[in-house]
Amino acid sequence: MGRGRPASYLWDLGDGGRLEGPEVTHAYNSTGDFTVRVAGCNEVSRSEAWLNVTVKRRVRGLIVNASCTVVPLNGSMSFSTSLEAGSDVRYSWVLCDRCTPISGGPAISLHLPLRGHLQYHRHS
Picture 1: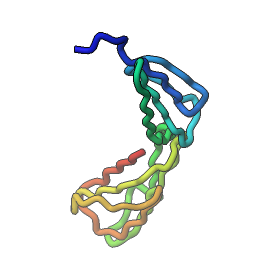
Picture 2: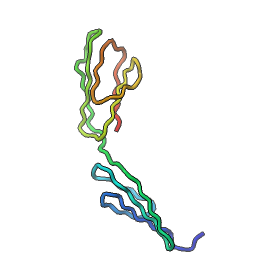
Picture 3: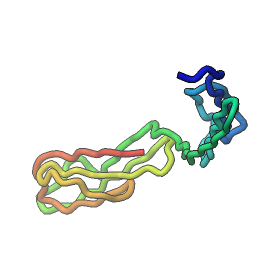
């Protein structure tokens, strides 16, 4: 076991924040790409490491809209979504008669007949 002082750590969190210690917790106040750097040193050496971090806005206020809710057989309908907030949102629509996700954007159009119900998932 070593007799020297333990290593010390200095973190640069990429947004102006700086912390000390072997483990740190930080909350970012803005979205963007940040480079987190840590330097560890003791009496005889120094080492540095870094990691790129991307901060995105959480999805909030998801609403789904339908062109109609009662549709005749062999008719068509459209669904769309709106968000209060969110960054780089990916959409997946699941039609329960197929139960297979359909990748896409915030809107989808369907031609009936369609059995079952529609599930909508968003990922951020």
